[in-house]
Image (cartoon, rainbow, N blue to C red; front, side, top):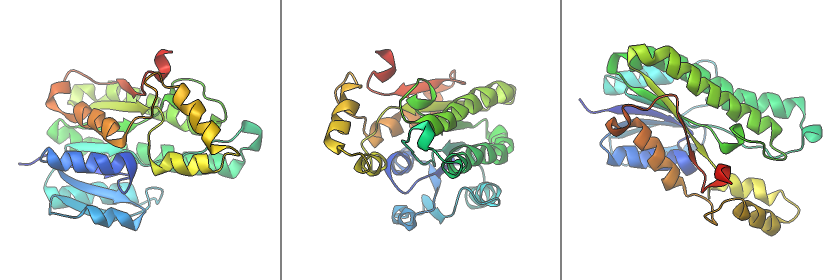
Length: 243
């Protein structure tokens, strides 16, 4: 039977690249996003697009059940859906903070909780999208960094708790990635060009990563070649945290 996956935040950027690469690797994929553009991924019956809000209470369980109904099994969950916020702590409102927790942390926990029994049946795995902001201090990212730090610890905790049942749990930690995600954040800066120059200077390779580069790391962590890897946070950051 073909391998199958659920990918959240699949309409754009890293998530979209993950869906494309999993499909090329022979997976059947349930691709979920709140943006209607996710429907564009339905080029073949290998991808089932689902327009849904990851923050809704019934979405995680319903999505996992839908994937199993469509594909007969679940082998991989990619928790990728998230929002970014760059704002100094004194300018970060309770609404800002609560909104990031509701989007970046709670759904990852609830999707994992819904998926783990199914993944134990197939000795499958979870790959979470964390961030270097969850590993080191980055100015003006306190709320976002806290959510990504939570994803790092979710990854480690689940890896330890579910290893005996054959489920591997890992995460990627991207640095700056050349997506609309970053473009939208930078557009709010007083000097976007200067902001971009600082971002590039922080990455020793002198550029941002591409969505495809991060997606390849996610697909690798899901592949048999990484069978001995669990509880790992794989930085895809152009050398940022090595400075």
